[in-house]
Length: 188
Image (cartoon, rainbow, N blue to C red; front, side, top):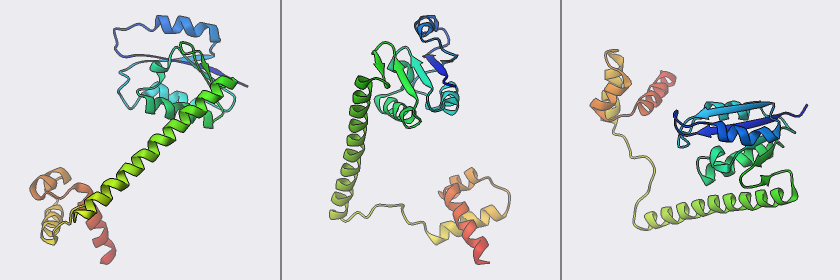
């Protein structure tokens, strides 16, 4: 059974969702998930719930792209996510529907730009690393002195300090400390 979801979001608790809800009425949504959360927040519980709920053949309707994605990149990733699950996405304001020929073409263009952007990032990273190596820089994590590691392990073994406190005293991060503790466990 195909299901139609609506998704609405406003940025502050004082804002109203009524305008978005009115627009979504024409899509006869089976369920509308609403959020009052700033779009810059990476975690949006209702959007996460929507992503877990949708099944092949379902539809997601939004008032506008700005209500769905936090940024162009985020929007492209979300539309791509729904597309991979064969879920139709409709944006009322932009008159965009991924089930129409025009929507499919635009989705292909969006995906091409996203891939192009990823490729540019990879290319710039490689160029930056090559340039750094030419100047004698190697990159990677800085080497940690054995003395500092032993100091951190000794503090840990006293069971008097938290990982954060050990980090503050030695400069050794908790993850590095635990990695060395794990190595110690298997070498004994």
